[in-house]
Image 1 (cartoon, rainbow, N blue to C red):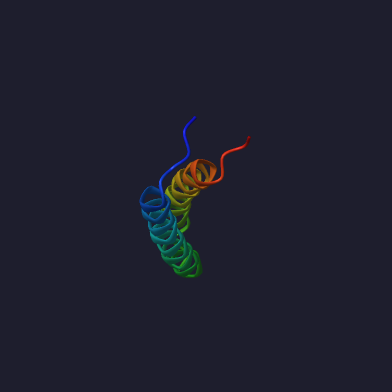
Image 2 (image 1 turned 90 degrees about the vertical axis):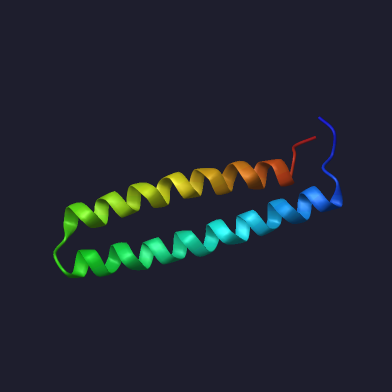
Length: 67
């Protein structure tokens, strides 16, 4: 697999940062919903968090390929 260019790596790093921000936002939202007793809504938000974490892991793997 060819290495990513510096530009591609920077774009990937920016996407990872965006995902981290979304993940943190949704975790806070889920916690607030849970505190309000809205358990189902909280669980739905956490499912989205899980999807975002998977996307982030995939991007990190692209950025740091195993030789």
